[in-house]
Image (cartoon, rainbow, N blue to C red; front, side):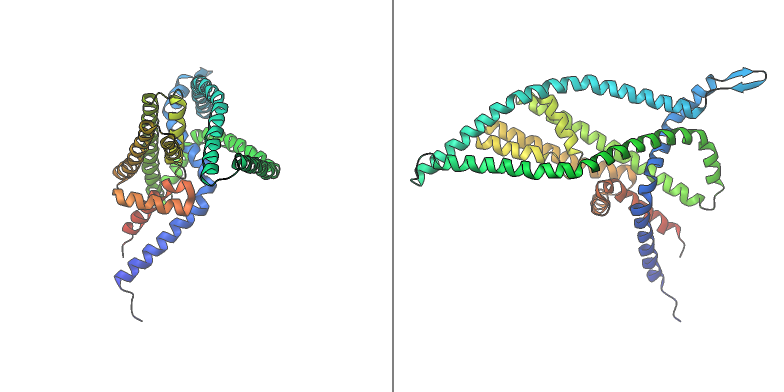
Length: 353
């Protein structure tokens, strides 16, 4: 029997490793994500929690008693969440004020849209020699029919999916409870788990996966956070220069929307820019398209460049892995794609053929 060539062995190895990594990321990883997140938070809290745990020890009759490090870590986490909640509250007051101003303008926009549509209908009636008012009545009947159709479609959907929404709220609540308990137990048992890993047969593989998860997750969070913050700043400044009274609300909203790969800044800025141009406001329309172009190239360049520099992939490799990951794993694929590619490369290189 002819022994397979080294090249064929390499191909079989790459295919096998790729399949194994895909199965793990697709089916196993979702089951342990809450615990990985809890462990990551525990690593961040461990230095301060450990310092406080040592300072809170009291000696009674020759024995030391103190607050468990896990409980201290959970209290720290709750304090941080409380501070963030206060920040969101006070920041939300400004957004609420702008949202109120926006709601007051909606009837005026609807009235302006009605006048615009009425004017177009009258112009078409003159061009096609139709009876005055017939197209206006037809357009109004179509709009009323559209509203009625939306209501009749939305109500059954809401009724059917209300239980699904309720179940989702319960699941999120349970996940939060599991996360908090996981942080406490991770802090409490971290040394024991590290001892087990150091004596495990798969120590090398554990260290490899842990290193790649840490590097890619850190790079992804820093990259997306930086891009989102810069997008918010660019949009806020652009809207302020345009004289938009909702520049803070609009800048933050579009920055958050840009973090969702399915939507992006173009979901709002392109239709808004076209509508502004049709109204004859050429300068404002050009300004909106300029903001979109800046935000678009900012994301495309920084996402591939920053991720590639931090994880050790070229910009093209990063872009391809993120796109493939998006197609295979959904939104998490932007993070799992580069992780999977790096794991495949590391495992293949570690096997001696």
